Length: 215
Image (cartoon, rainbow, N blue to C red; front, top):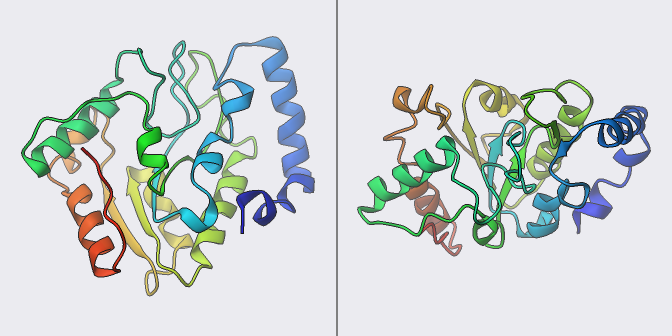
């Protein structure tokens, strides 16, 4: 099944109609990220049946030309935000190699890594400005739908906001990895050294699935 079919009932619910009206006003009055065509990019690039790993972010980057619809990802040619730099530092530490530090993480999305923010839009230069407007209900539904799958999914929850979603996941069937958020404020409190990228591939090998090419 496709995300479009799985989530079709959500689009007619009151919370989503209210969210849609809110977004029409926001995009009309302010600069909002990402651009409208990229809001659902994570779901377009990583379909329901193709999802093997979920990496959960918060809300999109809010500076100019950064957000592209994928959690932790930025458009090519944009300076890498500190959180993404720290993600690459951890990958390099785990695999003991230098990697091509790309801003655009589409290469991961196309391998079955759903790069999902809990809130999918943000007003420019105003972090968390679209928090509690309905996106959390929608993205919780995405997690719940993945949780219903018999085929195991690896959920990667970095930071307190993401870890709160652990209650939506059946850990008897699926895998959950938690750590501090990769932002500079918390990376040294448990993100660095979490070994999550290797652990994900160890689980995928155990499940007889193709490993993620992080590098």
